[in-house]
Length: 110
Length: 114
Image (cartoon, rainbow over all chains, first blue to last red):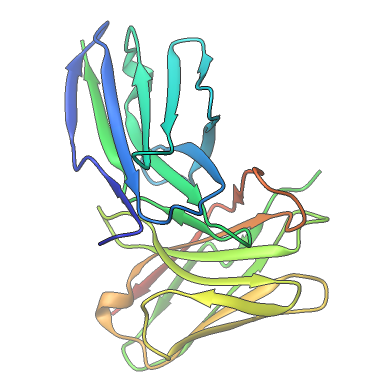
């Protein structure tokens, strides 16, 4: 089993749609969780951290379920500029080791 | 403040040659990660260095190696290059003394093996 698994995608949605990405992780000792965004042929950049209580940043909501070892990202009112690959990242127990999921590609169309 | 810098930005090598990729982390960051991203694929974890030591390596053959210098910069070496080594190689840095800190990426080195 992979350490971090994501929906394979791609997700093709119209502008204004709500889309949800899921991610599961295998190490129950994982400490920290993130969502990164990667634009085509660019480096990944942090979108948001994921907290146990869940957190929201504008149109983006991240949720963590430790019992199920599951992370989600919800994007409301999708914009064309949201088109990118979204990477789920888990920080392993103990040290700072970061493990990236393979990413889910989102394409928002007019 | 300077971000993570990688050099060269592009590298073309022939099969069987060796490639050396370099990464300078953000000042104050002691952890350096290397990832390989082949075209159309996700990030594959290669190596993790922290405080000058190799902490972990991904599922890659021994011809992928590296090191971290006392100033925390890092080198990735790939020996006996194969065509399938062609990929974007990304370096990221983060502080090692705190949890829940993001990693910052360089813009990558695009390695082409012909």
